[in-house]
Length: 352
Image 1 (tube, helix red, strand yellow):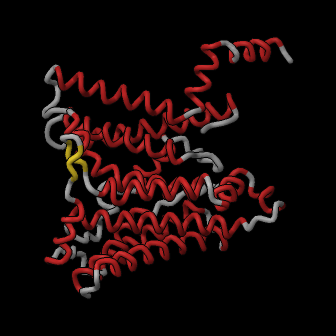
Image 2 (cartoon, rainbow, N blue to C red; image 1 turned 180 degrees about the horizontal axis):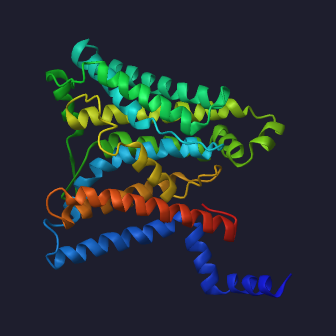
């Protein structure tokens, strides 16, 4: 061992070195610290009257409404990025738009029962994700190109499906009751946090950490050649990852239709869209863009951090300036999190 390597080894085995390694490699710990810092900072600004409205527990609870779609789509990105070979899905927002329009037709035009309409919406989302999976896993089109192409296709179909008009008749408007807040300890928490997000988190954690498929997914993402020699069907695993991402986007479609009380053809693509924030949250949560690395817990805490950061920025500026600074914050967060992931993997060889 060279003298420089020996010095590095000694520094890593002192208590400051071990603490730094623990914080950097355990992404949930690092993000939890950042979450406390961000929330504390905005509360301090609120106490000194620098914000246009109170940044308090009630406001943070209501902000969780935007956490649900962001977190679910970030988990969708976790699946496809972990699968490796440059996995990414730029079409999740477009899937939300198109599946949401199908859901709107089922409920508001065709008069199908609610549960049947939900099942159709989830099936459409899964099918659209499966198209991405077929293109990337079997046809071997690069994921960036394949999902960008389907983004355009799905967005266009969503727009022309109802002549670029939303579906917002009475049956669809009645869906807003599904999102009525739940009072919990004096705070009003969006109902979908308990009825949609938490069950999905539990199922996702079980699939990724306890099911056989989860082990196959990480094996394929880490080294698909070794996975092939281990008799794993690499195309099938990657195909399933994209189909699962489509399923999660279908769930978000149901949530957004209920939130807006309207099936909007641009629900997932308006403005900067849903895909880019979801990718940002996934990378911030410790999902390595190289594949094979990422945890559900990291993505969840990252989604909460971004949600409360955005909520604070909206109060820090008057008018629409807050939403403009949100885009800047997302860009900075994406670059810094990608650099942090690369540094951690190179220095410590692991990230969790």
